[in-house]
Image (cartoon, rainbow, N blue to C red; front, top):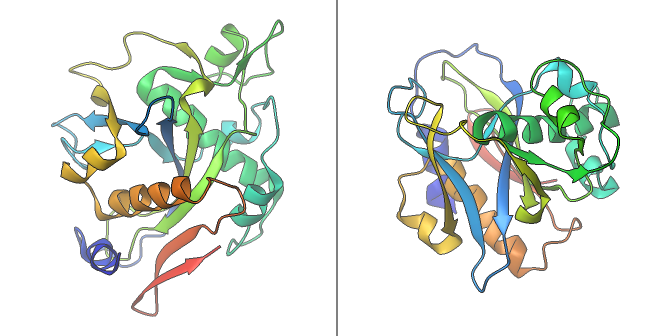
Length: 242
């Protein structure tokens, strides 16, 4: 893990020391139905300025609508508590909103709606969340696992304070066609065995999170497991546990 944390600190410096990180969230969909766990990854369009052609997990910055969208179930209190550590003005509402961001970004980038279908539609704001109301899908936060957090090191033009979540593939309640394609943000989606992801050209933080996921699966995948938090503090690489 040491070599990866060094890569994380040095990757793609761009000379922007005063950029403040934005709160963001990423979701790793996990399929454990077979003998080998698989994760869903998407390849970014080659025309993108940020990470062109790389395999990534869906994710992005928090949006104000993520704070008001109704959830079908609450976050596990252990995940909520970890999400509120080392946060200015921590609140359960912000912890919940970060998990909702991961679900929304997954829909926007893959067309997959995660949650539980019910007879009645959830209360939803306009925009991407309206698709959940249209299909009567209530986001299910009880099955969301918080597995890692990382703040982009200083010196980048874009910095994020990203929370990495996982959800089981059985949480997929609906698929919207036409989201993935040659002119979309993600040009393809693939289910990859965890071991095979090591052969991909990935960002250091992606590799670290995948290692963490593998370790957590081996340890029973409980909400009680510690969550690694990667950041730079006083010029030093820090990996602490939440």
